[in-house]
Picture (tube, helix red, strand yellow):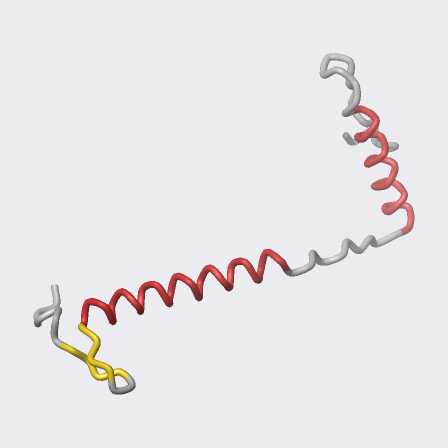
Length: 88
């Protein structure tokens, strides 16, 4: 623990602010800064998906439409999506 009197004043813009309040202001400021950075990163747009070939893009679109249709069915009736090569 650091020694010293927590009520020892610091001169900030001509005001005498106790050490404990300066520490609290620092912690609050740091928390606000980190929260702002996290919120800003969450609001950033997602990177677009790029496909290597038109066949891959067509396959992904076909899979998405299949999954959307399957989600409306009961769980025990849903089927697996079959890959054209039989890999999945």
